[in-house]
Length: 430
Picture 1 (cartoon, rainbow, N blue to C red):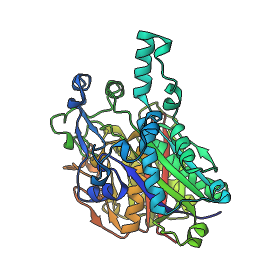
Picture 2 (cartoon, helix red, strand yellow; picture 1 turned 120 degrees about the vertical axis):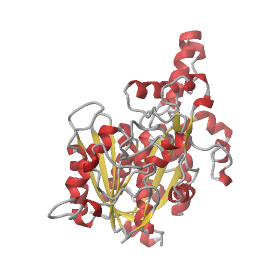
Picture 3 (tube, rainbow, N blue to C red; picture 1 turned 45 degrees about the vertical axis):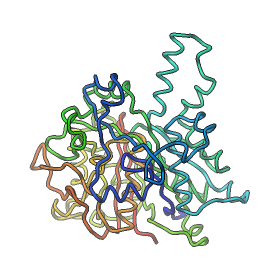
Picture 4 (spheres, rainbow, N blue to C red; picture 1 turned 180 degrees about the vertical axis):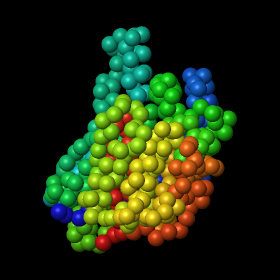
């Protein structure tokens, strides 16, 4: 089996437009969550009025405006989630210094970028226009702007990549599935380089209304948005919706070495599972999460005792955080793992950016890659008192501030509605 490494990173997040700027703000314990009330009366009337919005402004200031990344003609053709994906992919390719031109290189470079929901704005607005004004008010770009695979399609078209072109859509596991699937395409010889990740842009009143009706969103912190996302905290009461994109460049090890590429980390293992339990709720014992992590370590040929850090999916929901916490402890404690819960280093970066849905797994994979690369553990914000129940939450959750720690091997988790789970094991560059 061929080895797969990470050679490029790109991200658009509520902290910044750019992977390096996002990472710096994350380690500084900054928070990108704000109020949605100013977005209009349809937002102001909702029970949850907080979100992780991508900061608006110029690219040179680490902010987002489409014209810095796309010509106006392309901007009109693309949904916002696809624009985020294009920008993150451009950054990752520049970071990897991979701009192939030969037919062979282009044929051996592919894309797998997905989204959980995609372009809800387009679906909503087109539906209203069609209902009110009929057929002629439907844009000819409606379908292309709606399709989730168009993010991957636009990246392939922009760069001429003729290798595998694939789009995962597995709810909030999408971004991590995309990276894991891409790593296997390389490992099995279908490509030498893959551009992989996830993108999301559905901060829309209808999306918030739907999640709020399902009692999934934080509603107690509307007057203090930066305190709303509280992974592992006993007062957590729901996730904060976010937007953005994360994209990595994956590469076959010998291919990367032959061109003297910078290598951030190695993708060592990838595990998938299903809860087979409920549409939206996890199993209380976290078995699905446990199975995915165990499978990732099996492929990586790494013992639980060798895991130095876990980047948790933990979204700040009461049930989800507790189930994942149980799964992590079950995996890492015991005869083949850590001897004390306090030896388990686990954090959730959603306190800083909220839950980016289909983009979450990709952005959090980038954070985990950088944790391995720089030997630093990113913090869990707003963790005042771990608990609910308190006696179970006794790991090191990296509260409030980053911690220096050697990270030779790490896991990053993503779970989605429908009980779909993924875990990726990352290790030091070979």
